[in-house]
Image (cartoon, rainbow, N blue to C red; front, side, top):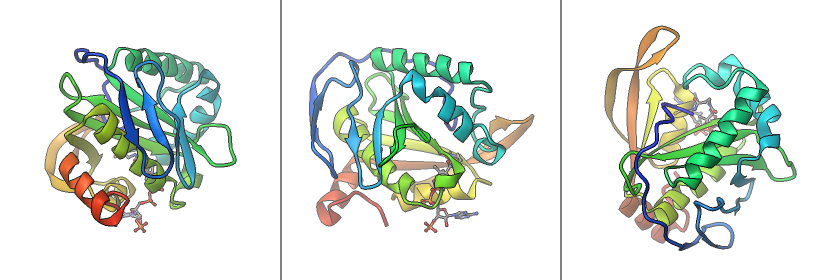
Length: 222
Ligand SMILES: CC(C)(COP(=O)(O)OP(=O)(O)OC[C@H]1O[C@@H](n2cnc3c(N)ncnc32)[C@H](O)[C@@H]1OP(=O)(O)O)[C@@H](O)C(=O)NCCC(=O)NCCS
């Protein structure tokens, strides 16, 4: 949920897209009607449901999770409103937010979100947050791989940006692991608790992602 100001851009035309997800089955869907269910080795990614609100509240509001991201809602009801907002933005074709559900569980323990930075998603930004007990378990890499693939192959993203506070060791480490390229520092770009923090700007380009997939069979993961 890094730097997601929740401001919609313009719609892109409706199309139906098919993509071979790396780890599971062929997805054929209009993602604006409903996000596809993406199955990985450790997690399933799916549309947010209102019933995810209590577990997302428990997972994402502790200080260790929220300290470097835009403030999450502070109540279960706030998460319910966010979920309704996310689904409406998805239906409008401006944004997609996947719930992260570890295999064997039914509740969401985190989020991956992507928003367009220009109409049509050619340039987009993603962000993510996962409950602390799932850090270092491979959940991020498994889910992140599927989200980048979805962004490139379904949304048509050409350049996928991410911003992480320079002090956010895990956030920057996670992006590096997924093959994102560090482009520079956005000075004093992120207001958090009354302080303007520097952020790293990272990017993944579609052509690099596809090239790495062709070579290694699974994206740019190191
Ligand atoms: C960001 C997040 C989703 C990553 O998930 P994760 O499970 O912690 O990620 P991973 O453990 O797979 O990868 C993190 C990497 O950063 C490394 N790392 C940890 N602290 C670090 C530090 N201070 N400096 C550099 N690297 C660091 C880890 O060692 C790990 O690499 P390794 O697997 O090679 O050892 C999770 O930490 C999170 O939800 N954080 C809170 C929300 C947030 O900050 N979101 C990111 C906004 S950009």
